[in-house]
Length: 473
Length: 94
Image (tube, rainbow over all chains, first blue to last red; front, side, top):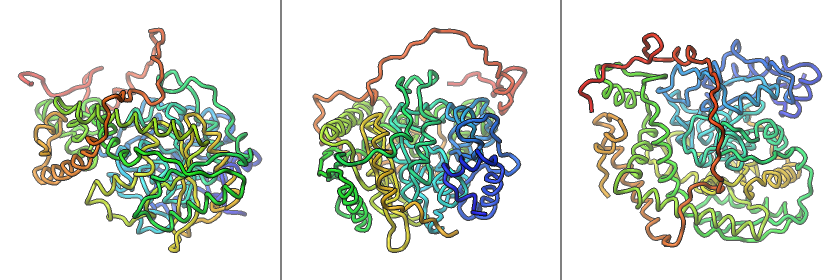
């Protein structure tokens, strides 16, 4: 019998259609029991607690894993934070409803950076996630648990969330496919908010086709999220086999910078050559405000975060510090409940929104954000897609960037501007370093042009077959 | 830029341990020094972004939907009394 836990989502669905999903679920549970303590990819996994599909849907009971900032009715949801320990949402996020409707088994909840604050999945209050390719290295963050689970064969496919690169960086570091959809493509209802004008839920999968299958289930308008787009959702699997001949692909010069890892630069440039061979037209373009994106993000996103995290006060749910007065209860609950990175972002966000600083920081940040969006609008007048690296470095060692927050923030230098502009982008494997660590490339498209990403990503993947290489664990 | 950490922590309803304060203050000052780069970008004629995709306002009818989740919601209260969340007495507080 083939190793069932190594099936792609597409293969698992067709097996489950024939024989039911039980064999897949059991084999996957076995795998988690075997290697789960090495990766720490799951926060909540219990073989007796797997939520079997109640509906016959497109997924035929195949198990899907969920990042722990997505609300699951009746199932603890902590955002990897002590402040939410014991919190059991009384409702499902829209994406969870859609998975249930689509016949998915809800398999487990994945570890992450606390409240998605981080690029390495080390800020989790429940221990860091480790990279299945090298357990001494980080899996990227913040959806590190989802990415590591897919890479290690502990998940067939998973949902993550992306506010500044949190799907794409872990996808690149773990050698899997990750899509951040256009802002508004997938409902955010039931996603515990970090940066409400950035957050998107998206798939982390083994193949591009698997990402299309999952997007077909989760995308679409939702009246409970007024920022979700009221646009028809195409069948994304239909775009996979369109030829890339004639596509115009831009290489933005600001994404190939001095100091970046030479193996990464070479791999991405090699991918451009593959596209050229397939008949695409490659041209250099410029997104001149790219280098300001991290600065804008660490004003605007932390402002939104500090406001969103105001609701965690120990009154209605989650952790409460015992205290004699209500005022002290707020202060103590938040001090004991939040980790260091959460505190740093709450403080920074509170500062940039405070009287006297709002104009100089928050408003200035939103203005430069407009310039960054306009960079993309101009580039997409010339090309259909942008091709860039995902990260300037391969996966780094645990602890390496934990002492200096700014160094950690700069890990997202190639992913953040996508969230500032709201455009869709995918990270997919494009090679390996000499030391056998995965390298990812990023395809960026215009708003709601996910189909163009699927088309180009699938063609490249079929040509190169990187996805067939798996970590030995 | 000097970061008034105690004042900001007060606004954010965070009581910080003494050993945390110095480290956080230093981190935040270095992040603020980094974002100073934006001052060099001319933006006088630029509109700030309010929504990335320029969505219009969304309206719907204001209808009552029965939710019937009161018990489920109250189940998570750290402390409750009857159908209320219970907190310490609020008298003479700011």
